[in-house]
Image 1 (cartoon, one colour):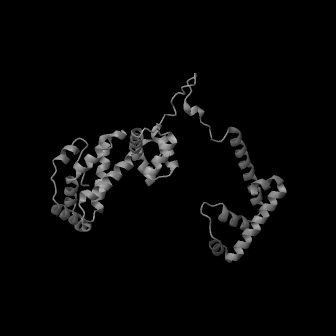
Image 2 (cartoon, rainbow, N blue to C red):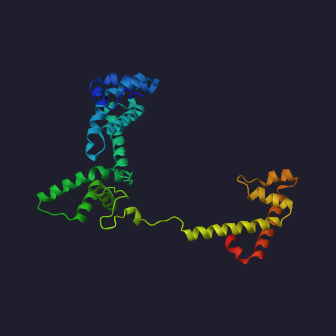
Image 3 (cartoon, one colour):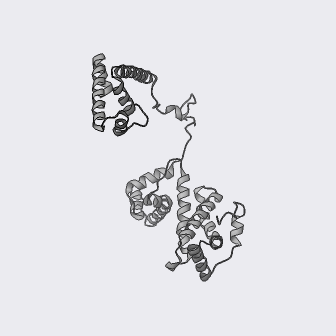
Length: 292
């Protein structure tokens, strides 16, 4: 790829030394890549605008992500922009690339903000990156007017300002105010030092249920074998090929092998199942709970 030349240590330094493209050169490089898939043109275009990607990555450092990772994500956005850029639209590449770079960085920040997925809809994304800023501005405006906003009023005003549902604001507040905790952390109120994971309900099968299910399975298997033994060889063959194989055979293929029509094989199959059901019911009335 065009960015293989960069390492985490040298990317910023190399980008700052890159050439500045005028509009005419930029357009020529964009055409060369779009029409001729000229990788040297792509490399030159991306290299020239890496300083833009690095500059935008720096604006997201406050979210706690490593700068190198932010730069890498900005680079991905820059490459996507270069690949999708249409020089016939009459806009500068930098104007077009800004959107892709920003979107790539924002997606990365949201993916890594919490182990719990923060959200990916446009309203959730807008809230994630604007909630604190909008809230601070509304608080300043209210203070200047001598007003005090309670939490509910603030949420409603943020929802109106950002253009999102109120419940999205409430959800995002919880996401941004909380943090991830290890399930192996000790409960602060527990004197015995138990971990939070010990408080989770075990949804795995209980021993009694496991034993009962195993017993039922063994019993049903024995009953089915007994019912199969009451069939003649041809009926047993049809049932085995139709129901007991991982890849069941068709009525037509069985008919070809047995020298019968497809309809006749279907009739024999139905008759065999009828015999098996009657045999099972005669042996034990409780079989109904397995056959339903």
